[in-house]
Each structure stands twice: as C-alpha cells, then as structure tokens.
Amino acid sequence: MKQTIDELPLTKAVTDVLHQLGVKDINPAYSTGLAWGGQEGCTTKEIYSPADGNLIASVNMATAEDYEQVVKQAEEAFKVWRKMPAPKRGEIVRQIGNKLREHKEALGKLVSYEMGKILQEGLGEVQEMIDICDFAVGLSRQLHGYTMHSERPQHRMYEQYHPLGIVGVISAFNFPVAVWSWNAMLAAVCGDVVIWKPSEKTPLTAVACQHILREVLTENELPEGIFNLVIGDAEIGSLMANDTRIPLVSATGSTRMGKKVGEAVGARLGKSLLELGGNNAIIITEHADLEMALRAVVFGAVGTCGQRCTSTRRLIIHENVYEQVKERLLKIYPSLPIGHPLSNTTLVGPLIDKDAVKAFQNALEAVQQEGGNLLIGGEVLEGEQYAIGTYVTPAIVEAENHYHMVQEETFAPILYLIKYSGDVENAIELQNGVKQGLSSSIFSTNLLETEAFLSHWGSDCGIANVNIGTSGAEIGGAFGGEKDTGGGRESGSDAWRVYMRRQTNTINYGRELPLAQGIKFDIMD
Ligand code: UN1
Image (cartoon, rainbow, N blue to C red):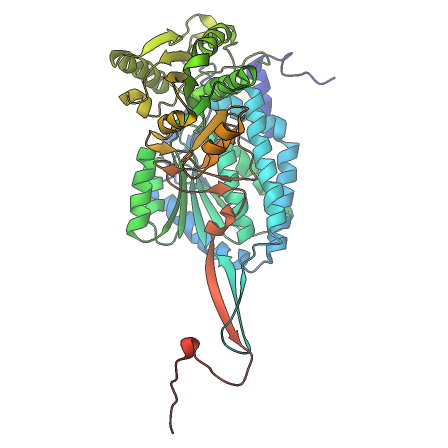
C-alpha cells in the first residue's frame, strides 16, 4: 500500500517528488521547451527549503549569452506557433492541464517545500494552474472582436486580435508557478511564445513545470521555443524589460521592481502588465456576521504566512464591534498551528527566508515607535523544529491608517487593527487611503453599506468583495489592481486581450470608392 505524506518522513517524501518531477541535483540554466542548456562555468545557486533549511537542489544561473539563445529560439518558434489555429493551440493547453492534474500532488508538495506555503495552499496553487488551462482551452475558440456598421454602403467593419510575439513573464516567489501559468496559458492560446524568468528564490518549481510541459511538447512533436524558461537574477529581468523583441513584459512582485520594469518597457513603448504590491483591507461594519468575518480575516492575514499580494493587512472595524473582534482574534491567534508546511496539521508555515523575518521584525519595531500597540505575536520561534529561523508568530497591532508602516506593504503576517466610527463612508475613506489598490472587502449584511462599498465612490481597488476575504480570488475574474499595484489585469474575464494586438479592418465589397466623412476627392483625368 502506498504511504501517505504523514507516514513518510517529510524529507523522504520530497525526494520522491523531486524524482517524479525530473528535478536533478543541479539543473540547467535554461530550457527552450525540449532542450535544456547553459554555459559551462556559470554561477550555480543552491536552493534551500524555508521549511527546514535543507538543500533541495541547485540551479545554474543563465548568462546574457544564454538569454540570447533563448530569444532567438523563441523568435523562430513564434513563426510556427502563430500559424497553428487557435483551437489547436488550445488542445496543447488542454493536454498541459491534464498533465498538471497527474502531477498535482507532487507539484503541490514541491511548491509547499520550496516556497513554504502549507500543502493545502500548494495544492490550491496547482489547482489554479489547472483552472486557467481549462479557461484558456475554451477561450481558444473565441478570442473575439466586435463587428461595427460602416457609414459607407457595401462596406463592412470589424476588428480582430492577432498574436503579439514573445511574452516575457517575470514571476514572484510567493506564487512560484500559478501566476506564470495565468500568463503563459493565455499567451499560448493567443499565439504568443513565452519566456519565463521565475523568482530566484523558487526556481525548482519552475524547472518541474518545464519538465511537465516537455512531455506534452514531445508527444505533439512541437518545435523548440514555444515555452521557454530562463533561470537568472535581476540582470535577466532587465534584459527582458529593455528588449524590443519582447512586445509584452508581464511582471509580478514589489512596486519597486515593477516601477523599474515599467519604466524600461515604457521607454521603448512596449507593453507591460504589472501586478504589484497590495495593502488590502477588510472593513467590518457593525452589521457584519462576525464569525464569518473572522474566518476570512484569519485566512487572509496568516494564510501563506502573510505573503500573498492579496493578504489582509488592515482591518477597519466599526467602534461598536471593535472590542469584540479584537477579543476573538486574540483567542484565535495563539491556537494557530505553526510548523512544517507539509504537515497536515499546520496552518502557518515559515516565511521565505531570514531577510523576510528581518523585514517583519523591523516593521513591528517601526510601527511601535509610531505609536502602534503590538497586541500579540512578533516572535521568531526557536527550538529544534524551528531551528532554521524562518518561523514567526503572526502579529496583530492596533494602529492608525496614516502611520508610515501601515501605508507600506510588509510581506509578512502583520495585521493592523484600525477603528472607525460613524457610517461606512468613513471606513471606505480609510480603506482607500493608501498608495496601493489591489484587493478589498467588506463584511456587512446591510445592503446600503455593501452597495456603497461597491459604488463608484466606494472601494478604489481592482478587487472588491462582499462577505468574502481579500485573498483567494478565482481565476475566472480579471486579477490585478490600481494605483501602485500597477494597473495590469491577468487571468480571467477579457485579460487575454493584452496578449494580442488589435486590428481594425474595413472591407469594401462594392464597386465604388466612397470616402468616410462624406469627403469628395474626385480625380479628373
Ligand atoms: C499573488 O499573491 O500574487 O487571490 C496572487 C489570491 C490568489 C492569487 C494571489 N488567487 O490570493
């Protein structure tokens, strides 16, 4: 009988997973889909798990020459891929979705072990990949534009969407594979080829995905260069941002990184799709179902150890229920099981690395200096199980919205409690009173409050939810946000349009050549 993860020592389970997913002790710097490559003598980076500090495997880092090889291959592949009918490209994506289903358990475990999110969330991340594949398959039979009526007789107007070319995808450590798939699967059905630069902190899950893709590419006798992977540092990201051969760069990560990418891509008039920092709030009004709200708050604040861009960072609570909410949270937080992310009982895993722990501690120190009141948490756990130094206790701080630290996105489990009085408009003002604009939500059973929150003077975020937390969006909706979040939209709805170029076509099926706007321009000869 097969042993489950609970019966196996956790590290042994991971060894099996690496084997199943084709991750070697040392992995090459790039892949063009079928072949792997990289220069001799390049730098090698060792990847350690934030869960237990063990070396998982190493990767070679790509050089500028490696990058060049990949771009050349991608350019060639685009010429072939764009000619394949979109539903046929969809068929390839369907097969990728099926392979992901086969490898869901293994890839989910690797995501969990390399990134540190708990297994349930690792599996959820792979499920998002499967879901976007399904979405993209259906989309491959649509990719539709409008038709318009011409003012001229016997004329027809319509618009169509054509593939763009190479799409560069720069992804972050916190969703090491799902965000790439949102971009790559849509881009693929749109007829684009993709070059993926994963986070330097989590390249092994990317290597695993590349092996999964490779099976599909081989079975379908597809050429090199459709799905490419380049493992490298910020230098590779900068090459992509400045490269005129890459018409669209999609980048997920910090606002600081996004501004650099956006500036470089903008300077060459390329397109960028930016999905950057969030500073997401949940409003709890006096009409909220508090038990429901609390579940959403805790998942939003401590899920992924506060390292989702949609994590709940601020809780804006009406003064009439403030003490009650605070008391309940102070009861729940000490009971949260913190531990190895692959253990079935854990709800809070580690932070990604010690730098993140430092940032967590620094933020807590700074906010207290500003007047914040640390109610619970903020410790770095010690002892054999936590020896690696990446485990922290999630913190709750009473604070004011204008504090410098509250205005910042600290990628860690810190929840700021902010009190409001009066009506919901005051809460909305606080919610909107930050630079970022990704996700937001309100808990209330009062229609007047919830509709105000959703109105044109309500939440200014890309995502606004009612009686649902800020994190855990489904792939069917467009995902992204306003202001410092970068304005890009990925994933569902009509986000696919950014991966294509738009063309307006006017066709004359008559024997006259009337000009638009009634202009007369008769040539006498
Ligand atoms: C991210 O953190 O970059 O809504 C993406 C969510 C997930 C995606 C988060 N579906 O929390």
